[in-house]
Amino acid sequence: MDYTACIQHTLDYIEDHLKEQLTAEELAAMAGFSLYHFYKVFQSRTGLPVMDYIRRRRLAYAAADLTSGRTLLEIALDYGFETHAGFTKAFRKTYGLTPEQYRIHATGRVPERVDLTKLAHYNMTGGMMMRPTFVTKPEIKLAGYALETKMHGENFTEIPEFWMRYVNEGWGRKLCEQVKPVREAEYGACIMLPDKPEHFLYVIGVEVDSFDHVPAEFHQAVIPAATYAVFTSPPADREGGAFSTAIQGMTTYVYNEWLPSSGYAYANGGVDFELYDERSSGDKALQMDLYVPVEKQE
Figure 1 (cartoon, rainbow, N blue to C red):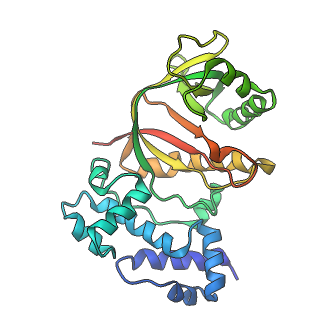
Figure 2: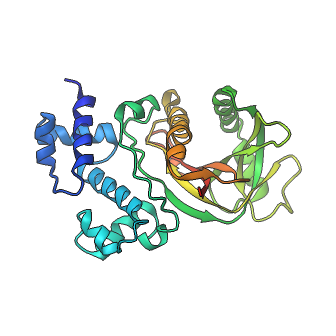
């Protein structure tokens, strides 16, 4: 039995019947699994329990409907939420904003169908890419280490090697001892070089309040204030480079698939960056966030 094909069939059915009542029992029977087995296989392929997945898809379509001019209650009821309050609570938990706040980011674009084969191509099986959360952040000052690399493939090997040196040679410990970071988190920022269009600087660093007491040996970089679409990588272990592979797959997916069809453009003068916090420590089920500066297309 082709498990991926069976689950894809249920995903397509969910997509076509989002405004109707759906049950796990009905979907399990459609896939030809026992309910228990269906729960396990569905989550292994999508990264979400089946009813959570349905809720996320309904919210994704509701997010697109925020540009329709209909009231929030009308949209909520249309997608199976019984009250305005319940819809708002679920929406905020998923997108980090209330529906009212999200309206300024809504583009009206209907979310693309989930394609498990495509996700597997980007090494994201088990890490369903829905829609990002949106945040607006002020200017960020980074102190750290910089690597100049090229965009045409070299970065996929040079950046992981750069991180390996950072970890193995204790650069992070040395950095934090000398610059007193604002928070316990590390950034990986991609900074364009205007005089070298095919090159960019990849900066591994920490956030600082100012550059006044940053030793000259460390690179200084400023990430300008911007609105970001924020994506979280699927859980992956460190062993065998799986975490690095998950990050690269997600990043490629975001730029190849999500951004061109999202209704957003990469913000002029913006800097995209990776954020590694406590979720990125240890060896199992690691995650990180990708921040992409965006502006709504006209």
